[in-house]
Image (cartoon, rainbow, N blue to C red):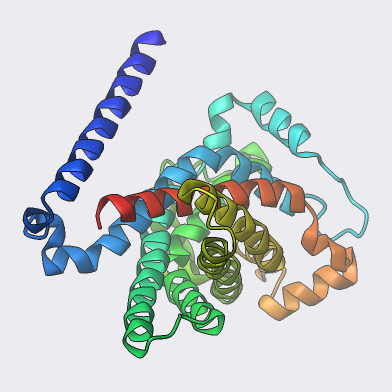
Amino acid sequence: MSGPVTRVTEGARSAAQRVESATVEATQNPAQAKKDFLHLPAVRAALPFVNGGLSGMFATMCIQPIDMVKVRIQLAGEGARGGPRPSPLGVAKDIIAQGKVLDLYSGLSAGLLRQAVYTTARLGIFDTFQNILTARAEKKGTNVTFLERSAAGLTAGGLAAMVGNPADLALIRMQSDGLKPKAERANYRSVFDALKRIASAEGIGALWTGASPTVIRAMALNFGQLTFFAESKAQLKTRAPQLSESTQRFGASAIAGFFASFFSLPFDFIKTRLQKQSKGPDGKYPYKGFMDCAKKVVKDEGFMRFYRGFGTYYVRIAPHAMITLIVADYLKLITT
């Protein structure tokens, strides 16, 4: 085990040294830096999207087991006001007991594809909007407003969610598959196998099941995450200039993680229920759509069911938001 770990450590150290050398060289010779590959117009336009996708995929690899537990908690006790109240630790133990530790990473391929599509789009679109707003504000001699950042975050989240919904659906199906009796499990081999089989059995349109709550969730999450991160970072820079840039970045990402969790959890809950559902013996789905699912949950399980597992969701969203935003910020710094 020490061999692979050592190689990874050495690789990371080598990469960090190369980045540091490139940064120093760019600082000492800015004229040459402007002519390198990273400063070609096409590359400059693509960088926000590339940085966003890489940071999101890195964060997903870190928190995938927490996401798996979160989904299982949301699906527990469906249709009953009381029902089981599983703990995150209990759910994790059950998953491991029924298979192996790596089962906590079920759906990882779907999670990575989702980040490659969804996070690439949302961070790329948001950063593009931010650059446009910043340039316009500098020209006018003003600052970007909270309202402008909010509009950019909401728009970026909604557009990206529509593009990423199929991968999101595949992720939920793969993570919930283990809840079915063994004879009824799909046992998807990968995200591409899941997408192919779902489209074949239910039609291409089924890949956009739960698109409404997915879009609303993404808009709520982006509003909480990207808007509050940008706003908090700007406020900390103005009000607490004595803090180091890394401390400001960490503090802003922590604030963003909380608001992202608070605003998006109810929509994430409904999205999970809709994307997990399959046709019953009568050939009908349990829920007709977003509003029908919301009404049935409130009626049968109570309003607070939407916030069941908030702690797990926060532990899933906050670190993901923090890792994504911090990595994206560092990538942005390196590639500026």
